[in-house]
Image 1: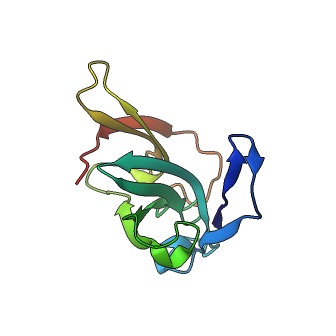
Image 2 (image 1 turned 60 degrees about the vertical axis):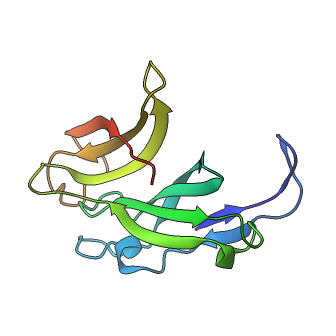
Length: 147
């Protein structure tokens, strides 16, 4: 589960956290993988053109189906209320054709010239058969287009 809370200052919670994401979708529950353990974890917030996005990982990390989900907030309603967010996913998932399995835990940065947004993530080089520690983990990045 992913929670959200107001802050009194950068280091102090202003109130208890409230649930923002509960892993209730099949892709967040490991659908197609060996484990159906529900997971929503590793959120990272992005702000672009007046909108707020939260990218997070869903599904069991030992599954090749571990993937990324997305929340979008359009500045309508209370951002502390889960109903004010639109949830979609998976927005980035495994690809047999490209040899990418279980992509997750995204981070974002900009290119050295500041002209592009890059997404950096980890993945596995095979279906992984439930191994949490995988000998072929990879770190990759690509240009992330903001629509």
